[in-house]
Image 1 (tube, one colour):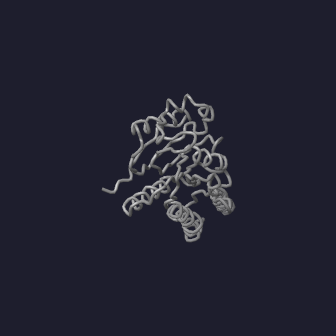
Image 2 (cartoon, one colour):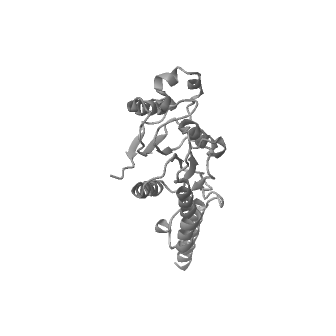
Image 3 (cartoon, rainbow, N blue to C red):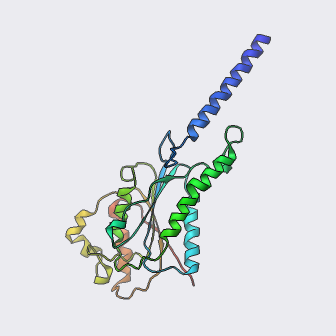
Length: 254
């Protein structure tokens, strides 16, 4: 009986060490990106900010609350990158990828240091991500708004985004008023004029099955001949890209 008891205790200890080892392996992250070592990113979110004019205090608070919600709802292991719409192509692209690590609330006191897990989440992920967002949520004062071009630069510069087969999400903070040499709503451009142009062939399919969320910044539409053409264009554009129809929320302050 003593021998049987000893074997049972050893088996239990062995099982405990194995389980702890499995938990540690699953929790391991890349020291630079915080992405899971075992699987890589489990989802991808790319946020594009297009802010020509400053936001009102109410709009700014509302936007940051919505972006906080984007971060909170993302699963552990989701990768985030940020980009801006700029008239200068040198500013296009993506920030360094950063994955959402485990937070203190989901850490195990038996196998993990809850304080260290919490500190890593706040200091290595949340603080730098929100600092980048705050820096980018500022007026650019640009004279043009190449939204399509900046979006494609963002997804192309995000490691793995174009070929990733897991959940992908695009978040656009924009007035949707495309204004560049390729297409300008201020010059009367619409989907039909774009589809009949040579530039239409440059539209790829980099957003297949991606979710799209637009946080629309209200802007005066002086010079826009047909405001309805703006909504129609983006619905057709994302359909052409293979993405889901975008969800839209307006940043109101009245």
